[in-house]
Length: 319
Image (cartoon, rainbow, N blue to C red):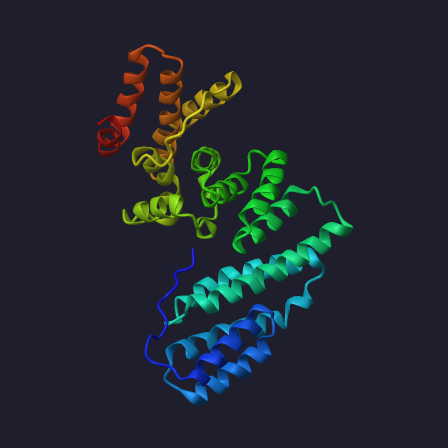
């Protein structure tokens, strides 16, 4: 999620405000050369204005990239090029103090709008039902704030590839923005059960998941390990609070997964992702026992296994 910094709040002349507004309009339209001219003129008007300086850096970053987008072999690769460069841009923003929301909003609509157009052109001449293509279209729509249409495309992608954690997580994010909180929680929990490593945390923006990600981040786990702890603390903090009954086949896979993970935890003590992954599956097994009103001893047995793995997690969960 992009971190937006406060812009320069000191008094600006009317001319400077007009130049910034014109620059952002041109940025939104993909006219980076024109936006650069506006910002360079604004810089001559006030060479110390932090917003002008940061916006000029951002526009220059994208002017160079947009000049290279046509080098891609086809429209699908054009879209992918823009999505990759957006990730690079987010890293670049860490070195740009003073970046303001208005500039970043214009850039988001330009970049994801261009990627969306490229993917849609590709879909017209190729398999428009390909889940990867539907996912990318949905992702672009989501980043532009069109959550309803984004959810429709992400639902199509997930229906064709229900084991893709990335698709489900983005769909959950859309539902959070649509205020479908219960559905969002279900899909987030499913996604982090399937494959926490397959989820792009940076792309998730709803407060529902961002707060959880930030809380886990405070615990200073290394990134791959932190992603495995997100569903564990999601249960503990009540974010992943919506449960569902497991089908017999799913229960069989859950038990088999637990058996294999228990073995790996013993054999690979240095592998830090295994413990949180196993604890999360124990949580699912406990939910199953609760749903079918199974005997308390089975639940207590699983709780003892959690306690042996992580005393603190056990106390937070059990109390």
